[in-house]
Each structure stands twice: as structure tokens, then as C-alpha cells.
Image (cartoon, rainbow, N blue to C red; front, side, top):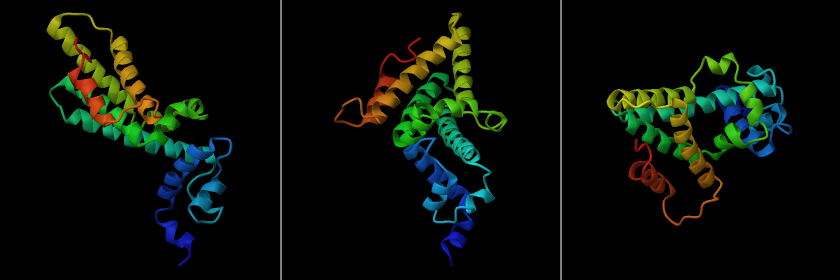
Length: 202
């Protein structure tokens, strides 16, 4: 059985997986379907069974990344179905954990030479799919609504979102890029910040 026949059944998934690694290593300009085909040990024409161009493959990579990221955020929410603040804290921890354990996704979304172009490619295929940032903003709105109903205080959801996102995003980048030196367990430290500090102490 040839390598190409062996890979045929899961070729699309393999192209997406190997494509992410290559895109991360090569950058957009040097990325090509031919290189991904070589990494998958198939002919240079095989990827065209699933993707018309490298942009199509990159979009598939982005959709897969959004799906995995959204899944981890939804799992965090489901751990605390009746506690809106705990949902946000758990989502913050999940956010940092996801990007620290998958730094290639952090670079794809935010730090790569292609990150801005990826946002422009965020057309109907992505907009109609799973959106992790919608999951996040829905949690923000629930928390905001609870605070206003309980305390009668006006809470700006945009300010709340920026505060929460800014904190966890900053921690994710510092840890993933190894810019913050720490001898202990980074994720336990993140949990301590989110659950033991003043985060969401409203």
C-alpha cells in the first residue's frame, strides 16, 4: 500500500494538522500546498482533492483552531452552570492553559505574520461557525447582568471584557513566550491569580 493510499482516508485532517505546523514554522509567504503534501508523504496534487488553494487550507486550519478553542471555553462554562463569576474565572484559566499548551494557535491568532490577514478572512464560513469570542462575550453579559441586578450598579460590559481578556491574554503571552521566569507550576500560579486575588472582585 502506497503512502498516499494509506493517508487517503484521513488526508484532510492530516493536511490541516501538518499545515498548522508548517504555517507556524514557515510563515504565510513561504507556506504552500506542495510543502504540506510533502509533510504528509503524498503527491503534490493530493491536497487539491480537499483544498483549491493554500488560502482554503489556512481557512480550514483557522476553523479547526476556533472549534478547539471554543470547545475548551464551553467546557469551562459548563463546570459552573449557576455561577457567572466562576464561569469567567474558569474560562480565564482555560484560555491561558489552551494557548500555553498550544502556542502555535496563539501565534496563528495573534502573533504571526498572517494574524491580521486571518481576521480579514473571517468571512461567513467562520462567522456562521463556532466563535470562541462570542462564548466569552456571552459570559461577560451574564456576569454584567447579575452584578447590575444584585447591586444596582451600572457595569460597562466593554470595560469588563477588556479587563478580563487583557489579564488572561497577557498571562498567556508571557508564559507561552517564556518571558516570565518562574520555577513552579505556571498554571497553578494562574489559578491563584484568578481565584485568590482581586480578579472580578466587583
